Length: 276
Image (cartoon, rainbow, N blue to C red; front, side, top):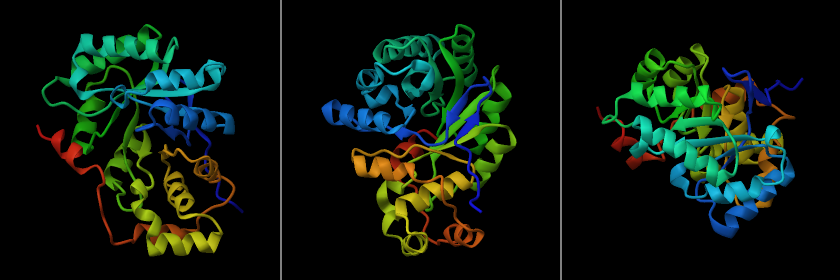
């Protein structure tokens, strides 16, 4: 019997986020438009973008013609724009670029110790009240910041988007989020392809007649995460969708958990914003 993995997770708003989405970092210009359009044509409905990706107009072009209610669009506010008025202005600009009336989820992209968190969360809550966003959340918040955010936020925090893959399982953070009803979205779920040649991952992939990428995504899904792999290849986009009709065994999961190699891919940026 295949272990059931939820295809959607309900957020505090009552709306649901698909557990498989498309990350759009570095999906730019015509190549980006082709990749996002291909993913949508295949059935992807969760698209993740951000102010700093400089591709929201492209995402808007790709989603044009689709029923908005069928889509789940996430964006993120840059760390330099976390003051109250800047959050509001960023959201308004994002909506214009995407040519949509609302965002399903708006995240703080990186913490900024120079901006008091209450004003950022107050702005996000105001956007919820105005119907500009449905849910609010954070990204790259480690446990100490996550605890602070949970105490401060006037509206529920729906999601924490963080780097997660077989070389970086952040157990304390995952437990904290799950215990507080915060969904965890794994970005760089393939470790920017670093894990695809891993001996353990490849052995398990061969065992199930799947690819190493599918093993990594399935492992994260079975741990309760949302995954947002990025790809420009139609083959890989389709491959990434094939993660729901088979399952890793407990032995498989334990073997991946026990991989000794540990590596944070997003090092420089991560360290810069964790002080204070």
